[in-house]
Image (cartoon, one colour):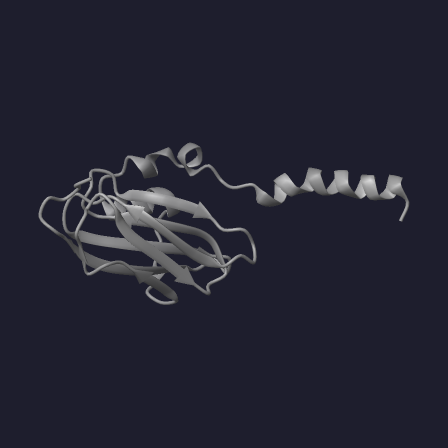
Amino acid sequence: MKRRNFLGLGVATLVTLPAALSAVDFRKEKPDTWTAHTLDDAIKKLYGDIKAEEKGITLKTPEVANNGGAIPVSVKSDIDAKTVAIFQDVNPEATVGVFTVAEGQPVDYSLKIKMKKSGSITVIIEGRDGKFYSAKKTLQVALGGCEG
C-alpha cells in the first residue's frame, strides 16, 4: 500500500471515530430527569410514558448494604440496548445515571451508588427494538445510612 493512501485512510478513520463514539449528554438533553424526586417522574422525564417488560436484565446488589455511601450495583443484559438508566427511590433525586450504549456493545456495568436509607434500585433499558425492559431490586441499608 502506498504511504499516501495509508495516511489518507488513517485520517479518515480519525475523523469518523468521534462520530462512532459520540454519546448523548442527558444532563443537557433531558435536564428535568436529574431534578425529578420520584421514580415514576424521573422515568417519565427521561423516556415519556412507557411500559417496560420485566425481563432480560440481571441486576445485582447486596441484600444488606453495610455502607449506604458505597453500594455496589451491577447490571448485565444481552438486550441490544440503546440506553441504560439507573434509578433509586430514597434520595431526593431519583436518577442515578443514564448511559448511551454503542451499537453492538454488551450491557455490563458495575458502579457504586449512594442511598441514605433502605429502598429499591430500578434499571430501565431502552432496546434498539423500540421496547423498554426493567429490573428492580430492594435492599436494606444498615443503620447509619451514608457512612463514609
